[in-house]
Amino acid sequence: SVVVVLGGGGFMVWMFNEAKHSNLGELTFENPLAIPELLEPTTDDQGRKVFDLTFTAGEIEFIEGQRTETWGLNGPYLSPTLRATRGDEVLINVDNDVEEDTSLHWHGMHLPAAMDGGPHQMIEPGDTWSPTWTINQPAATLWFHPHPHGVTAEHVYRGAAGMFILDDPDLEDLELPDTYGVDDIPLIIQDKKFNNDGSLNFDKSIFGNVGILGDEILVNGTHGPSFEATSSLVRFRVLNASNARLYNLGFNDNRSYTLIGTDTGLLEEPIYLNRLLLSPGERAEIVVEIEPEDDLILRSFEPNINGLNFWEQRFNGGNDTFDILTIRGNEQLVDSEPLPSKLVDIDWPEETNAVHTRKFELSGTGWINNEPMDMNRIDFAATKDTTEIWEISHEGGGVYHNFHTHLIHFAILDIDGKDPPEHLRGWKDTVFIPPTSSVRIIARFEDYVDPEFPYMYHCHILMHEDRGMMGQFVVVEPGTEPPSRVPEIDDH
Ligand code: C2O
Ligand code: CU
Ligand code: CU
Image 1 (cartoon, protein in one colour):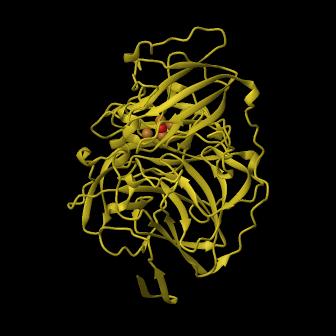
Image 2 (cartoon, rainbow, N blue to C red):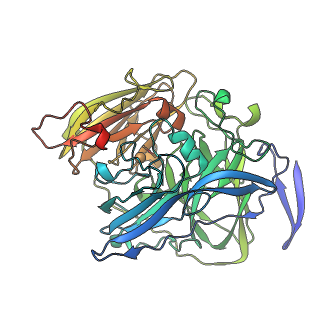
Image 3 (cartoon, rainbow, N blue to C red):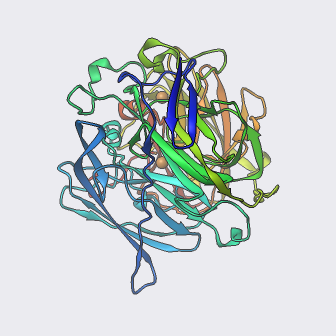
C-alpha cells in the first residue's frame, strides 16, 4: 500500500510494499528516537573514573495509553551510555534496587573474571557490587546486561541493559563521525510482545524453539522511532539486544552503507554492503550516507542463510520483513569529512601458533557437547600466553544458535571450511552459527589468570543460555593443574 502524508516539506510518500510491522495497525514512525544520555563519571582519589548505576524498576508508556512495567539502570528502561578510553581505570558501583538477585555483565569486555558480572557475581537486593579494572582493548561498541543463571532471558527482556563505548587515544586522528547523539548514534534494537494491558508478555507456554519473539520493535526504547539526520554521514552503533530475534539490516531503497566495526573493534578497512545479519548480542558500526530531505527506512529483511529462512521468527506467521527506524534528512546537511580508506591495523592470531583445537557442539535448545551447564563444573582451562582454535558446530534441526564467549575477542577462521565473508573479518565476541554449519574461531589468552573464577561461553539466544547451552572456563598459568570444580562456590 502507499501512504501519502502532508509533512512540513510537502508531500511525502512511503511505500509499504512487503514491509509489515505491527499488530497495532499502521505504525507511522514519528516518535523521535530516544538517545540514552552519556553517564558522566566522577574521578576518585586514585584517579579512577567512577560510574554509578542502579537497577531500577519502573513503568514506561512505549505505546500510547499502555503502561508497561520494566527494569532499567538509573531509570525505568535501558541505561545511560557508559564511555571510557583505553588506559582508563574504571570503577562501577552497581546498586540493586529491584526485588530480585541479579548481576550485570560487561559483554565484550576484556577484564578479570571476578569483575565480569556473570552468574558468579550476583548482587542481592539492597547490595552494591563495585567491579574495577583497566580498559585494555581496542575502541569498540560493547554493552552490559544481567546474567543470573537461569533467568537471564527474563531480566534482559525487562530492559536492564545499556551500551558501553570504548575509545582509543591512538585513533584520535581517524576522521570518523564521533559526536555522540549528533552523528554518532546508538541503536539498541529489541523486539517485544505486549499483552493487551501493556505488560510485557513473557509467557513460556507460547515459546517456540528460541524463546520469546516479539512483534513490536523498539529502538533505544522508542516504538515507531524516527531519527532526524543533520549531517551527510551518520555513524550508527547497532546492537541487537533482543532475546532471540535476528535482524538482517538494509534500507528500503537498497542503498549500500559502510561497515566500519564489528563486535569488539574497527575493521582494517571500511567495507560496503547492503545487508547485514545481526544475531542477539552482536554489534555493528555502520556509516550511512544521507541526502538532504532523505526519507529512509532501516528495515530487517527476511534472513536467508544456507537456504533456510527461519520460520520461527516470522511476525504473525507472515513474511519476515519489517521496519525498524525512519531516518529523515534535514533540508541542509552539515558536510561530513569523507571516511578514511584505512581504519586500523589488526594483529591477527596465527593458526600455526594454536596449541589446542576445542570442539563445541550446540544441540537441541540447551546443550553443548551433550551436557547442560553446571555452575560448579569447570569445563576446561586455557593456558596464559597461548592461542586456541575453537570449532563450533550446530547439528541443525529447526532451530538457530549463535556463540558468545566472555574475556576474549576472536577472529573467524572459516565457516564450513570457507573464508568468512568480508563483514566477519573483524574482532568478534559473538558469532551466528548457521544450522548444520561449523565455524572455526581463533583467539589468544594473554592475561587475567585466575583458577577460581570462571568465564562463560554460551549461545546468546537467551532461552538457550538459561536452559544450559553454556559452559565455563578458567585461565591458568603454564604448567599448573586446573581445578575441575569451582572452588568454594558459595563465596562467589
Ligand atoms: Cu551478553 Cu554471557 O553474555
Ligand atoms: Cu558476554
Ligand atoms: Cu542457541
